[in-house]
Length: 456
Image 1 (tube, rainbow, N blue to C red):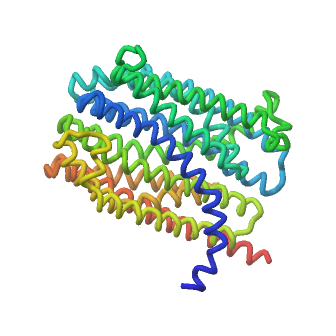
Image 2: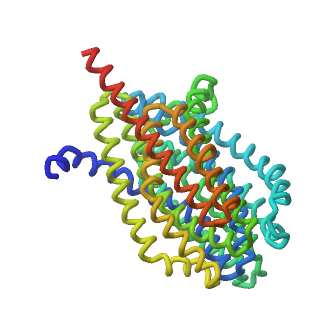
Image 3: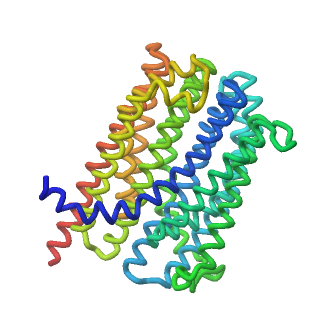
């Protein structure tokens, strides 16, 4: 064990130093929706909580498309900065900002004309849909400032500056919770807004976060060296294509996974509001640990990108495997927490005993899939750092849409196991994704290592 630890100890320390602020920052995205669920569950009731579940199921797909696109910048920044090509950083940021701003507007239009029309035809209860629509519209508009924030965040993280986005995310969440309670409950003379209140709080929070992060990057002395070529004149087809070549498959990877979970929520919604609210409680908790694992994955992308940029494939493998170790230890702890506290954690969201009873059982299943979820998200991050995004995209499609969701539908609907059957299918999808992505990492990284030895 001493030899094993000595082999990876330097990488554990450097990866954790980079990862911990990213973990907290990534957690911030989920905490916005978690706070919405908690506030609505306690102050507006089960129907409103079910409405939040339907909206989050639809909007999360839009959200991850946007986040995935923004991730196209990080490995490129990590690679060029490792090669000391600092003049390229500002040019890449200019192109990414243009892409993400346009993408934000397109995604909002998609929500406004697409999702708001679709929501009427999802076989959900009429009262749930009525409360869901205004909330979905406000969340949809918030994607525009979020994409601006994500651009500057990914730029800073690609250069190894991870604390700033963490601090902004923490304060953003404090503001979101304060405004959410104020608007939903109706404090300080404001009329109670119900579910729409958390929509407004999220929109205001994301707008302020985008403004603060942008000002920090553009005015800080730490980034002057990298921003010499930042501006409209640096926007060109070649760099935009480079970013999209990574960002588009990453967006598809996230879309295949999250849409499978959203599809599961819609299937569960046909079973009733209680089952759907229970799913929302359990998936909110699982999403928190997933986003924390994705912070470890983001750090793995940066470290892998650095090593890939300077063609040090031995250190690349050691760093990547250490990221696997970190995420497996972390997700083992969260699995134990889910299983040990499964009867108590749902009380964070609701006091409805029927909802708590089902959610408690779902948390046991969530405990089992924690390791698979962590391994697959780190696998995606490591491969992204090497610029390998196309094969992993195919893997995620097969894992979730060919295996996970169909098996969940078979067990949950056809064999009448209910909400638990659908979650069993999702667990299988996560296992398949984790296994295939690890095999892909081993094959690709060893191939790079061998090619270097042959050249020597």
